[in-house]
Image 1 (tube, rainbow, N blue to C red):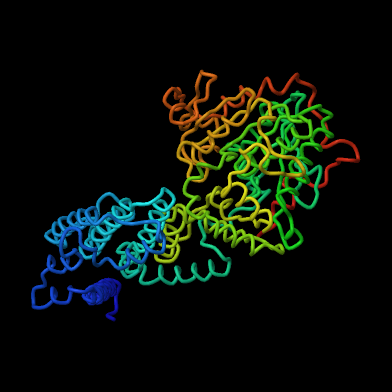
Image 2: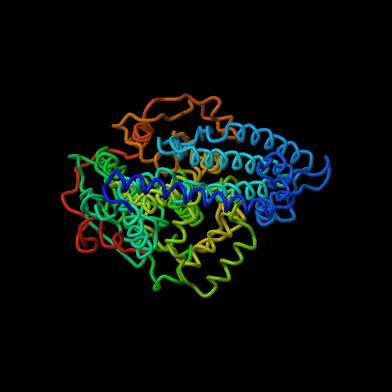
Length: 603
């Protein structure tokens, strides 16, 4: 290679262009292996229309031909329950032919428009890369059109769409150094340093067991995340109970308990002081307690759903009452924490007890009819496999759960970081939310398998008396306390219809509020920021379908936090002097400062 930076850059560019051209030749040869395509490529001037006709059925109504990759994917995802109408398929293929011919006529002037993955100047300035991206987008649209045309039940269609979308996202040219013009440009500009850094990033991530979404070295739990002042006042094998230091001279007589999901760590509710729901509750004058789940190890390999309800949620309620001396408390459950809180309330109601005065449910499923995209994974065979896997105990690894949730939004949570970390050699910027997202937790296998069957598969909680937990038949008609139910409009984990379903279960006073954004961003939306919107209804009626509720709801600018605080305020009772110490006496003394050691344990 010639010496001098200018000549080096020119040589890099020439080498990259030659490498791309070689790949295109291989791509062409691969395409010619399809039936009928070889003849189209004969001669000095290939006929693209003839090659495309190789994918056409010989006549309308005849069996579809070609597209072997989609056919295989379709068969695996849809099985015998799905079919494609030949006439619809023919229409899709004709549209593809028309669009492909138009793209071919544009040639190297084609532009991949409308997709941020190909929006940089590097793509636009590289005609070959731009044409590759435009071709990919055309193929992606066609495959999704075929997926949408699948005939079958709703679950089968959803599975086909999900499988095709995963395949499309994974096969994007931006995911491969050989086709990513932006990564190639950076490699040239850095004289290969970005590639070396990308390899180092890859080796680092292989060692740590997951793709880096942020610079994890910047964060430390208890130091710059989860910093609200408090102390652990109780612990057992399942959880630690944290009490937070009051920030007001007086507090409400009814204490407030938060039950976060045990599928991840509680400090999503306490990332930074300005977006901490925990700190916000303390600032409102509530004596606040939070469950910090233990990250399960082999000692909890036999733990069950019943144990988590009896020895964790119900036990936490009892301890908060003992410490405060209050007859009853207010409680909040978030996501799976809300499912467990709701189950615990039904168990207590079955025992003739009501130690909780009011309950708040944030993005919680109690009625599992509308589970969104997660439903594609759940069927009898899948659940039975998990039951067999954990028949004698075991752990569901946190990294497996985290990977599953990441692939629900693969472009944002997987491929974006693959491209940045490995192809471009970049270090992702510090972001506390993504640090939390990477801090995964295990689940006890028996707990996980029971949850899958009785919630996601059979939806037993909403069937009065159908399922028994902790010796009590679950019947939400007995849970008559006031409830505040929140759902996020764009939530892909707990769809808004699923969150709204809880309004149909509780017979007491209810308030439902819908917030903008998704599962996390919708919940962690500080009132002080004035961002997004939320919707409420002045009516006390709750129609069965959430769409009917939305149709008569009123939009309000800003966070739902203020609405919730106003609802919770009268639930707190009278105000009393704030306690001067944590816990109560020797029975519940301070064990260690918040956030405690349980939350620091890695999966």
